[in-house]
Length: 129
Image (cartoon, rainbow, N blue to C red; front, side):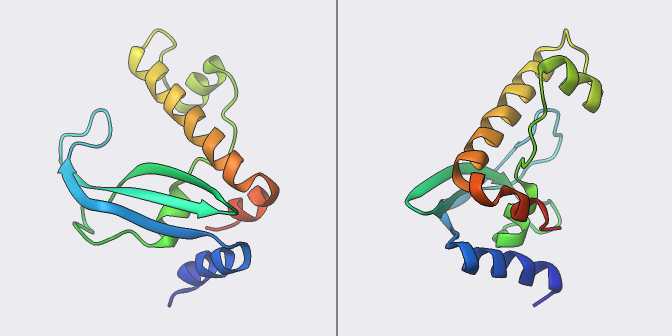
């Protein structure tokens, strides 16, 4: 077990976090602008009677291998990105872009779910690197 994996596993054990997979992964385009398909897993994180279900696009190199808890936790949106204009400025999007608006809404939705699940321990979640 690597130090990275151990960080995630320790966090999960300490706080009762469980990762499960729903169904089989799909092989498809996951991110807007992708030109290559990848395996996409339907994941569910649960903690303290709450859950968050989402799609996780596995790295192309890892193929159909299930993502680890570390992979999933480190890819979550753990910081508030602010308003749309700040988001576009920080990430290089044009404020007139529909893609930017869809991406912004998706990031905000994910952060809200992460905050709901981990609000009392979000600083500790942010430390998993």
